[in-house]
Length: 304
Image 1 (cartoon, rainbow, N blue to C red):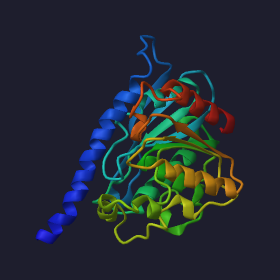
Image 2: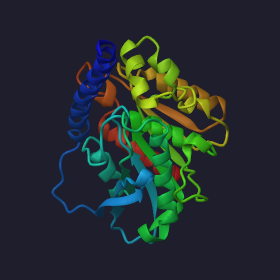
Image 3: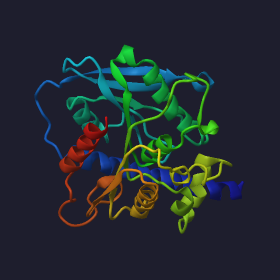
Image 4: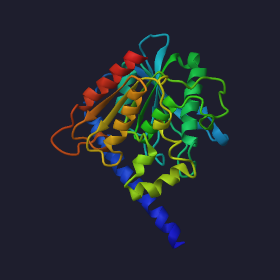
């Protein structure tokens, strides 16, 4: 019993650390823009079931522009939380989501199965099932099935990147909406782990916690860096230069592999920013959150 306690305790400690980061990220992201008193130019549908693995409904919230367009490009948002916490209803990214909806994108913000109750590859199976669901129901939700992108932060960045580069990996597929493509056309990855082997090197805390997510699954096989080839969609990576939880080196490694394969990709390094792009030193992060949001909108407008 004592040995088991020593394994669980660092994992619980990691969850507590990530909870603090989530609160700080919520403050840093939402405080960058003043709250508008104007009527929001989008509608919201809550708690749409997109898949039911093992009979458990997985839900999404849909933000649809009110601009009169027949169909909109779609962005699927994948929340962070170290694969063990978080939800589509978290407000840490709501300012980004609503900004995208106001710019003409439909946004589907999804829940997915969490560790430790659900081990990998459950999480990536859910992300890919959400893509297939939205494509299969494109007419119902008035989205353009040929223009689908992914947006994810932290663990959600990892899952978004992995979904984008892992076509035809049987372990990552599920039976629902079989035969519908789960390909995407663009990915914005904010400070997500890319190589789960190098990610844990030198961090006993993460080495202890990661098995709660992966179980017996190979970290190499769960890493986006393992699947990159020239057919992958364009990437925009965004990462703080002072991130101590997911080091900047993770996005730098992913960028190098993408560019080596000839994939269109770029990295915005945010000066003075830690994990979640919160201010870690100095007077302000650079570029600002407003500039970062504008870059994400411009990237999606270019590729979707």
